[in-house]
Amino acid sequence: MRRVALSGLLGTAVEFYDFLVYGTVAALVFGDLFFPEADPAVGTIAAFGTFAAGYVARPLGGIVFGHFGDRLGRKSMMLLTMALMGCGSFLIGVLPTYDAIGVWAPVLLVALRVVQGLAIGGEWGGATLMVVEHAERTQGSRRGLWSSFTQLGAPLGSVLSAGVVTLVATLPDDDFRSWGWRVPFLLSIVLLAVGLFVRLKVAESPLFAQAKREPLDKPPVVEVLRRPKPVLLAACVGIGAFTAQSLLTGFMISYAVDQGYSRPQVLTAVTVASCVALAVLPAASALSDRVGRRPVVLTGAVASAALAFPVLALVDSGSPGLLILALALGHGVAQSTMYGPLGALLTEMFGTRVRYTGASLGYQAATLIGAGFSPLIASSLLASYGGGSAPVSLLLCGGAAITALTVWRMRETHTDTLDSAPSRTTTPTPEGTPR
Image 1 (cartoon, rainbow, N blue to C red):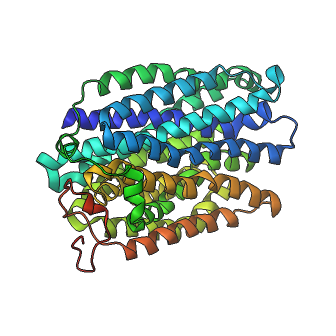
Image 2 (spheres, rainbow, N blue to C red):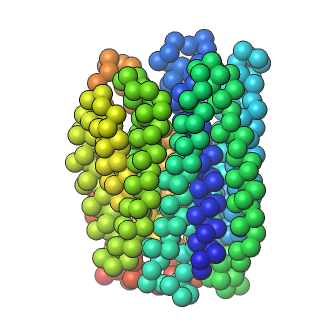
């Protein structure tokens, strides 16, 4: 069980490192390097447009890798998604800029970002299901805690990406723009080797091995979408967490730099907030094993909405110390409380034969809606209305409200037993028994 959990943690951390490095570097230099003919505001929007391209690809990756993960197995898809992500990141690190190859530079950048999106779209489902389905046999009452190891990959990847970018950002500006920004992407090949080594030693999910004997009459995505309520709830419940994650990490870097903070100050604040998340995530997940997934996620959503305007006010203060406090509260505490139980919650909503597809599709749809377009919308609003942090705060409140309303419509799942029946994808009766 420990080996499986370590595999989920390291693999997801590598994937999120690669994915978040892009967001961090996009906020700092991609607007100038790949879209130089646009004015600065439009250049930033265009750079975040390629960021959104990765998120658009994530639901497609969830469907594709979910299909094969539900038919062939979790482990093989985990290895494939990690290889795609690592190679895509490495190629971004050697990609010529606009000055060298003209319009092909942004075209190739978007193409590689789509490859990243496809890979991470399949990664989360495979890693989470491997941990939760292994835990079901011996640690069923602690699925939330064990699933938090894969959830920890997001803040751990953020710490790694922010730490590496912080180091290279201390270079003189000309050096950073000419070659320093490439270093975090090139390092991904080392992390890829470590992640693949660990994952090769993990056995296939025992629940899947048992359920594989039951043939599927239709593709998993068709089975899931025949009764779409579970996947719609799965998508909506994650919107608040991903809106907060996106706005308070990648987008916040460019916003805070525009407010007068230095790059190292902002990256330090993001790193500290991610370290806080490393403590809050497992605590929230373990608590959800005791009191239920719904109360914990709802608490995080309410906290995120309540802190939205205070957090941005602290950022606007111009104080580096208050910037750290703002991101620690908004991202490290509130967002992590919403995000922690999601791995177990979404896994418990689907039967084993369609679980990879159903959980991945719901999760990645949430990232598309909540995180993929939030930086783009926020940048557009700030450019249109002449600054001020109110649009960002309102976006945070809106995402949290969607999560809170969705939790109210869901039933509690933490006491359910994971089974292999496809009927688990059906809508539960009001008494909580699947029809």
